[in-house]
Amino acid sequence: MAENETKRDRVRRLLIAPLAEDGMRFKHGTPQDRQKHQLDRLADDLGYMTDAGLLALRDWMRSHGDGSNRCFWPATVAVISTAECFEPRPLEELPALRRWFASAAGRAALEGNRLVAEYEFWRKFKRPPVQPRDKEAVARRAAEWATKAERVRDRVARGLSPLHDDAAWLDWYNSVTERAQALVAADREDAA
Image (tube, rainbow, N blue to C red; front, side, top):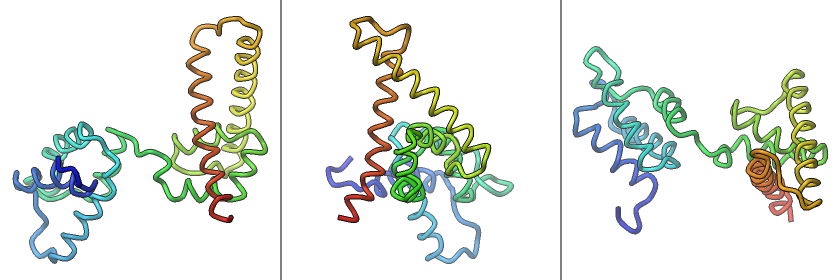
């Protein structure tokens, strides 16, 4: 890997170029500019993946091309959804998530002590909890986690060891809290 290789270049080197060398192509008549645009978009969308994730995706794509001979580039949406199965995209890279947490909804989640539960809802469903049952589930989970965090912190403050995997859970909870708070704080920094 070159020192100044971009994410797009890395995806081209590990995924796109080897597949093209293996014979993956666009259907006859696809304009050159459209081919370039699709591959550039694919490279940008997959830039978050690790080398190992890209290699696994490449192996999958070798046998999942479109057409009767399986030699045409699959639809971008198919590649991206499969990539998510191999290696989920970090939430912080989703523009909709950043907007959600930077909005009044993020501040309300912070004030309502639902920040971690809403972040985890986003992680699982890649969308905000807007339906009444989604909001109820998030509120219930937030209350459970807040109670657990308080219980573990109290136990540690009294000089006792956390039970079972409570220490690891609290580390996870604190880490997610920090990431979600950073998303909410980004709005305040932009406004300043």
